Image (tube, rainbow over all chains, first blue to last red; front, side, top):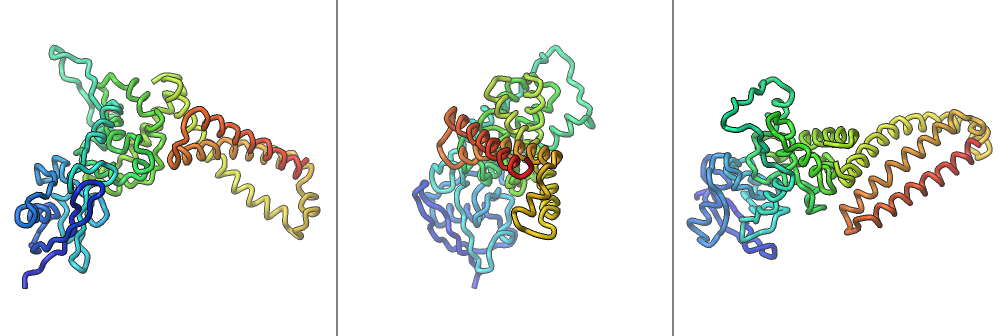
Length: 239
Length: 114
């Protein structure tokens, strides 16, 4: 008999519930493969989000057996229990639109709030900026720059669940990479913003973001950098 | 940097700095307990070893100040995370809590070492 997975998938909105499906077990099967099988063969109305399927776009994150993960790069063998059970739910800390698709507006709005937009000063007539790869700022920016915006850290963050206004690990990590971008001219407003009521000082350094980040980034370290930068600015009275 | 962001940042800095002071204070306090209770545990015996010590009085006076800075800032964060209490009333209540800790803490120091 073909081995099967006992899959529970969240259906509906925040007040929905889990529905059960039997999905054939395959070699090298990812959690996204499981969801896709259900949608194509068992439940055509199932809503979920994905794009690249290779861990670049950050759109397929879900809660798998209670833990936020990128589903396209999560093999079933890594997360399935001995009983073959797999529970797939939408990301926590975000409103559910339907089934496994969350509304990520608030997540990306917070990137804008944290002044996560590059503020350049050079024009097309200027030469390319020269940034030494070994400089401390470039190294600090490098450490956080590979974020794919999947919201796994935001979903795993205790602080976001306690204080919905908290900017969250991804937005603060983005702010830190720009604080270290020597070409950027927006740091005064950025430091001001991330030092506010729901900014970097709210972080308790639980490190759930670091633990869950599929790209193995360390937003907690970025937030610690912002704490130091804001303290230096506050001490001097400016940014 | 505007007042609000600056205040939040300096409060965070004050809490980290007071935490560093408290770390040392707790160690010294444990040693002091061992010293104060050696050979007997009655109130009179302990007081006979602590009274008149200016150094210990200054140390515990500073300990109280560190607690009075650290605890209200932490309590403010906990209340903001777990309740809807925000704004000036919360800040004033926490300042009053800090003043309460200083007043009663120094009173206790005066009783032990005065």
